[in-house]
Length: 469
Image 1 (tube, rainbow, N blue to C red):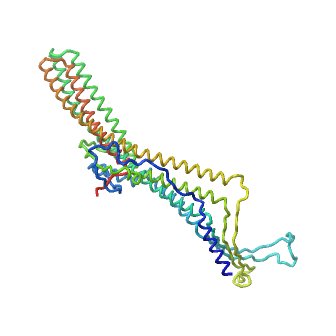
Image 2: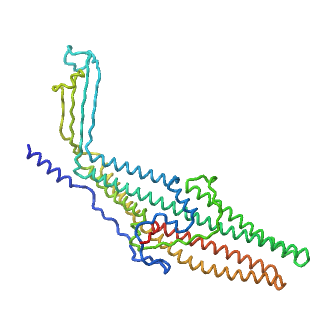
Image 3: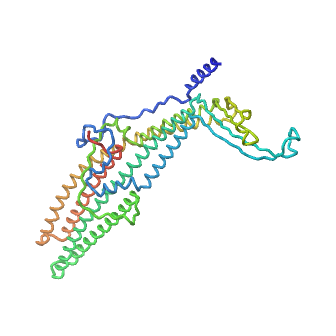
């Protein structure tokens, strides 16, 4: 008996290693040695590979810091991602439960009456009314010979880790969206401030032109040009204020507030530029939560192939049960009323109409899909970093050029006004020069805003901010 039990144990241990999961071989992905669009302005020394926490604090704006803190508590988008993570955690616990024995207790305490003409009744002397009381317990354990349960647990763990990465990706996306919208808002505040001063200056110029017209110095053409210039500046101001309102409403939604409730006071102080170490391309795939989630789902898909394959092999359960049965409650404790059963059960599919093969084909197709999605995620990650680096590089050049344009336009506007007051040129020259100056100033502010937004895009592309080591 002991030899038979030992042989059975050895056979089970041998079969337990017969996993049907294919060897996991992630696809090859491009890993450049350096980012092509990196410029001399990018720090050359890689920083810590751990994503920074409040990276937005680098902008030096307490209002932005407060808004970012509200995302964690109030954002419905983040709450949905957290719920999906909790769902994956529950699925993992359910998979773990399949790897453990199941034990159940049962009881049946009834008072029965049988029919006088019940089929197969053995004797008419049997009691028609009797007690049927049973207390029992049963247990079952699946021998995971083909690795089905282990594969389900591994896939569940990978899906749970992917859901955690999804939460990180959603959180980073919300933080970056909020920072970008806030930068846009402050950029519009600066444009509105510029236009307010411009409207005031144009109003004064229009008043002067009207007085000159009434005095017979200026003509109707000049007053028309002056009035048209003033009205156009007022229209630009209204357009900027409308755009600002829309951005403010978007910010309210991001932080989980009603668009009617959130009000952000205008501010014209420029934000500090955000600095971030780009690091090496090889670290990108470990830092991007969306890429990490795609890799874990690819691993889970590989494990699911093993689950589908194992369905073609026998399922073996070790089970048993026992208890006591008596017609009276007092009889439940009597030894002769005890019963028990112990033994294995085996289930082997013989014909299923091709269902198992179809499930295996489905699992392989999902693996191919997950593999393609992972490769696409990697390629997209490198593209987004290169795009952000390129934007920062060229926007820096554009910013320098726009500031030169502002200086030249300001000089031209001043000279044209001096020439007009001395009668050396027409008012059209003044309008043209002042319009060029306003356009250049607005463009310079927009480029500064775009540079700040590009730095946020870089943080998003890198999978988070960097902490100095």
